[in-house]
Length: 480
Image 1: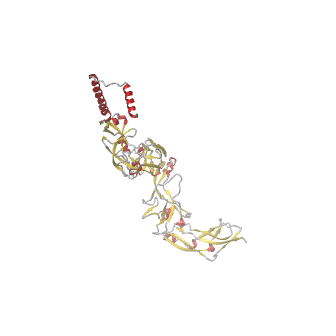
Image 2 (image 1 turned 135 degrees about the vertical axis):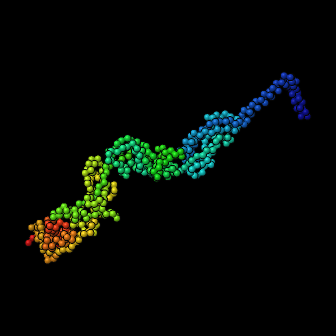
């Protein structure tokens, strides 16, 4: 009963609400609805075509970049060779992107970047590699649906290493020399003499040394230093390293620790001289004929299998080159007739025995022949030696000191003497003709002493000498 009352109340309430009854549509209303539907369909088609349809814009002559840092190639230690970098800098590609208008429709040429992919196809090897060219936006968005022409590039890569290379050659086409002057190439000095060079291993392995190019024009009469920043990279065969086009590598082909050099070019004056020697301690009885015919004519220089005469005693003389880098010594060089070794004492001349003598050290002069000494030998074809004896008691003791007494160790003995000379001259020497003395001037202390015996030959004998004079044994004590 209560429910029936509620329904009746609701029905009565609804009847009192102001609900409008549907009206009948007019022709104008139907026309407006159709137009609205057409406009909505047009908007939908426009949006779909403008933002969501596929498009393929074309871009021409996009420059190609080649950033190898932080890539797989750089992890392998690879770098582009300069010739590839130069080629890439001039390379452009044409590109057609494929995608919907919403994603690529607003792109312009300045938004895009063509780049070489140093990650996907690269391998750990030096030399030529073919790598893909890809497209991305400047903010890094990559496009896989792109038609790129060309889509690959051939590049050359290498491992970059370093090594120390000597500076040891110079070119100076415009320099001229004073008369008689020469350049000693082995004396040229460089500063620095070595540099550190870094570059591609394949090319660096070919590099042997640095050649400095001096472009100065000058006439050299003495040593001079030049500064130059022009140089060449040279291989072990002396050839200048070149690029793939056969052109000489420019100075910045490698990374180097120095790119400017000082070159000191030494100027020398040079002459060749016959090698000579002076014989000393010659008895006063020797005349010039004896010196020439008995001694100098028979003395030979022996070098390996060759034998030479002294200057003036044959045409087969040994020569040595003497040079000076001091222009003030040039006149002295012209005055020299022979270049002598250290002298030989007459008593050292023993038939068949070699005698070695070094050269006299002449200040300001040197020899590029690197001959420090020579060997002499006496031609003993007609030279004899004879043994003679002299009584010790007959040896004269000269320049005695009054503070001392001098006792002969063997007062009744004899001392052996070896004479050398021609048979004719030796036959003229009698034992009684031998005179001997000892000079005591240098004996200033007591004790057992020895002193060299000096021999005097007759004035009529000028082709005989004493070989290795013996010594006399003495006991030096206080005077009685």
